[in-house]
Length: 224
Image (cartoon, rainbow, N blue to C red; front, side, top):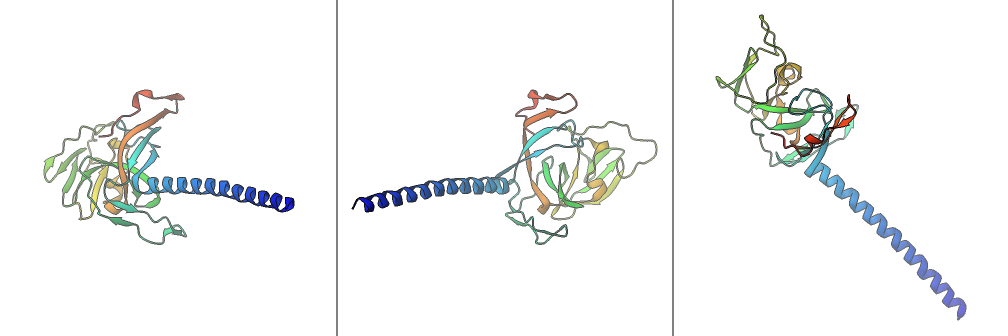
């Protein structure tokens, strides 16, 4: 009888030990799935690596992007020899508004993410004349545009003089705020709205690399 009791106690201890391990495994699994779900469908963090959006965004800014702003985006990251095997699925697709700052897959290399501002919408006739943007024949007042150089005497295409072009359906025309230092739709064409990852919302962290300092004044800045 004594031996049976000892064996029973030992069996109970083994069951309890497995139960605790299973609880930890399930908690970790749920946490990972939740993090993956949030990153895929809700929000994602991005770091600004270049000055193409200065002075709105600086090198070293870290931003939060909402993934659901333009629909439910189901990304497919399966690549074969560097080529995406299946197309992304986008449900309830929405067209961005003019002036939105968006993160998207770079059309010439979809493994890279770009961030620009939406300037032209589907159906717009867009033209750039000596650095001034015209939409449907009217000058577009963009308070965020930054010009570091005056327009040259001779036409400098496509940077300072571009178009006119009509933005096709299902696409937008994007430009960086730092107009003379941005690789954007003037160079590589229109952006398919299905390639948009999300809308940039605010800065949550900013690091000034050259000075090795934190830019506390940029924390929490909303992006417009």
